[in-house]
Image (cartoon, rainbow, N blue to C red; front, side, top):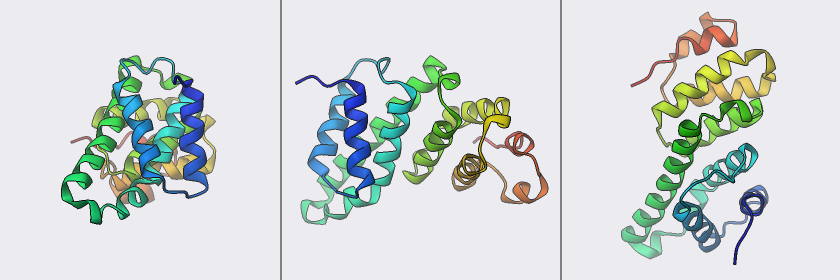
Length: 176
């Protein structure tokens, strides 16, 4: 069966929103996206919702794997990591940051921080795109973005207290 990208996004989003852990479904959806050659048909909302849902489910998805053993646990975490890497490579490679609403930029950053997936180039591009569009950010999106950068150790926490403006804070992001 063939699904439209929005359908994939909606399924991920719906299951994550109502906190229904369905590892087999998430695994099949992630496998399908991983096997796709390109993610060009996935718009910014789809990408933001998929990363958010997978990050939200990160802990829940792996809670029941104790009975499956270490091998299954490693396989699931690897699938999760591959999906996040593929999405980051697509966003960075296609340079589509201007297609994201600011809330989706912060959702992407928060999702990568929640899932503990490091992708320095993605965060560097997020910082640049956010600084250029800082006047468009709602306070909650600013908070999510800064929190994500702090949790990924890409910004000095004391810089948050010393810099009052969002753009100035993002100029002090450190990359490994």
